[in-house]
Image 1 (tube, rainbow, N blue to C red):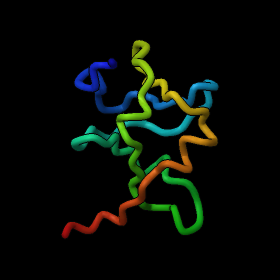
Image 2: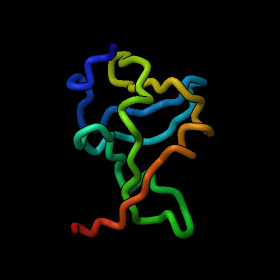
Image 3: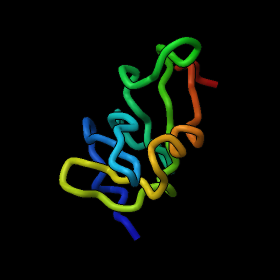
Image 4: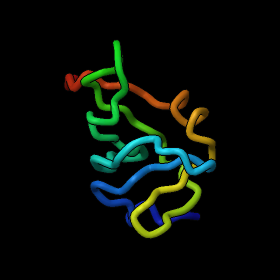
Amino acid sequence: MTDISQIKEHMEVIGADGTHVGTVDRVEGERIKLTKKDSGEGSHKGHHHYISTALVAEIEGQKVRLSANGDVAVTFEEESDGGQA
């Protein structure tokens, strides 16, 4: 099992295929919050996205490698408009 506490701000998140998925803003519970600059375009622009820590396969230096390919991992992303409940 990967030690999630090793995930730090500004680490690159990559898919199992090596494609860029995002950049870590921080870890919140069981989710990795990605920076807004990696938020995509259109309706996704300006929103933070989250990826479950369950998708983390390993941590390689300054990279968080996921167990899913990049194009698949983004389908698991959750979105937040920044509002707090």
